[in-house]
Amino acid sequence: MKKMLLLGLLVPSMLFAQEIKVPTGFSVAEIAKNQGSVRHIAVSKQGHVYAKLSKLKDGNGIIQLKDTNQDGVFEEETLFGKYPGTGIMIDGEYFYASSNKGVFRYALNAKGEIADLNTFETIVDGLPDHGRDNAKPFVFDASKKHIYVTIGSWNDPCRVPGTGQGMNPCAVLDSAGGVWQFDANKLNQGFKDGIRYATGLKNAVGITWNPQTQSLFAMAHGRGQFHDFYPQYYTPQQSQELPAEAMYEFKKAGEDAGWPYIYYDQKQNKKIVAPEYGGDGKKTGGEKALNPVVAFPAHMGPNDILFYQGNQFPARYKQGAFIAFHGQSSELKKGYLVAFVPFKNGKPSGKWEIFADNFAGTDLAKPTGPIQHRPCGLAEGPDGSLYVSDDLGGSIYRIQFKK
Image 1 (cartoon, rainbow, N blue to C red):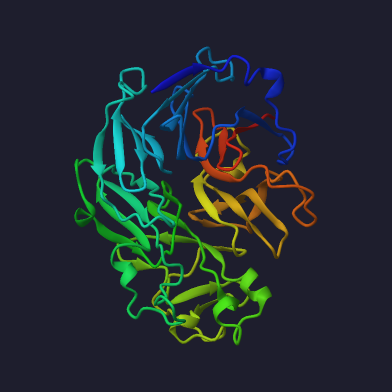
Image 2 (tube, rainbow, N blue to C red):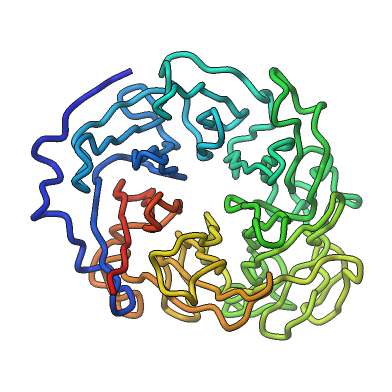
């Protein structure tokens, strides 16, 4: 554990991040910077901010930022948790964080703070970690009886090594490529204790439980390498613009998003058979697979999703979905942004839109320099503010609205 005071880092005059573009009435403050590979974030009822790191900082993988006098500036930083990872959450009597193999919990004291930063219990451990797409984000259902953990696939198209053929059936799906459900209140579980709740997701770093629909939502990362292996079916441009990055809703165990057998083509608005499984870019399939709730442009890299519950933002944002994208679309010449999808009665009520933009710090149509920031995690503060983490520059932003 390492503790320090941030006396000179984030004085109020330095807070406002004018380069981030947000709708009229909103403002953006940079509450932390140079924190390393900040992945998902959480904000406590007391307003403290916690961030999970995918690479250790001074030997630690979790950052705790405290606003000790409630003036909006975080004066105290503490590092703890000697494991890298992505997932993080505060729920009930515990603080939770994940490594690339498991999920752990720390008890909270009467003040809602972590009682002992060096003491934790194991919920589940020993989950598959093959190095690629190995993040273990997690979420609870409303009953708090179940915890859902993503296990991403290390094989992008489930292709037999050294060939253009897909594994049939895809052996990866036995232990990855979906979201697994475990007992939220049982300690020291292993992979065998879980059930495959959602399947057909190559990797879903952004998962959440929608309190309005009482269902699991996941943001799927799409596969790639169409033209590389199948130039007879796909042009280089199609390879850049397909398939969709998609939002899925899972209402019950066993539902399937289709990977690797199919992908969603947002141009044709159809589920298309993957070329590894006999597809040619036009043949449809996956009749039993889910349709996306929303389809986004290819390769934007959705890494978190949050359904807004607060009252600070205008009413149109209530129950809507914010999505953090840490990649870019060659088609749109846009990326590294936070998008918003309005929802009504549990379903999208309008097209997706860009909510916060220009984290890249350069015009992606005509870039003049390197990418500066990549949105990765989202969290809602107790006052309804939206927090956004950046896994490239190590910044954490707070977005507020004032009438």
